[in-house]
Amino acid sequence: MTALHDATIWITGASSGIGEALALDAGRRGARLVLSARREAELERVRAACADPSKVALLPLDLMDFDAADAAARAERCFGPIDVLVNNAGKSQRSLLVDTSMDVYRQLMELDYFAPVALTRALVPSMRARKTGHVVMISSIAGRIGAPLRTGYSAAKHALAGFTEAARAELWRDGLRFTTVFPGYVQTGISANALSGDGSLFGAWQGSERNYQKQQVNY
Image (cartoon, rainbow, N blue to C red; front, side, top):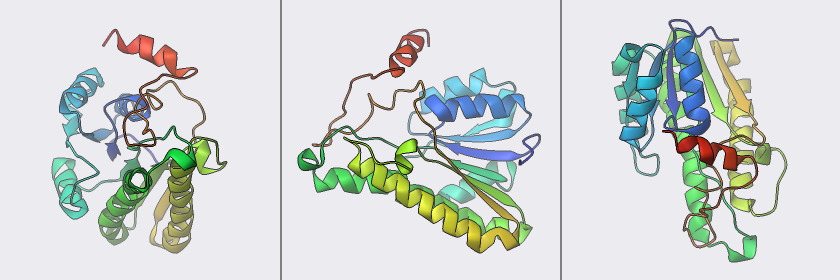
């Protein structure tokens, strides 16, 4: 396991859900954090909740419209080289294949696959030069088993798993580590923020996510 104390960790999608939880836990373990998401106000809230806000830098980022090399350079200016990249940002889907536009499929691939690949490629040269580094891909159980209403999401997450396995096989001799995480049901707002077939937000809370919705009222 990669030691977190004094490590510099860059987490995308850090304004809520899994990304927020990872930031809070890593902060308690003594890590320096670079937190990215679109919502700067929510990133500020997460930073304030961390054990030591002085060790948390914010890098607002829209992964649908960004320059990976520039983002990586800005991230490394915060606390130095990135030791751990956690590619957590993403979006799910709640629509049948026959009701889903190709634009939605492209959006899902762009955010859930191409964006983490781009960030990984931007950081790998620095990690190889230092002979150390850890890339974590937050996938989904849908990245292992396809499920109804998630054809595009499952495809992107399967692609992410394949990329990560191949990258691990290529770069382990250079001291780099790659981990793919396949969460099941978690208390986040993933379904409410999922894309419908026409590109609009699904907007409904499902299953255990309703508990998460109740918690958000207190924020």
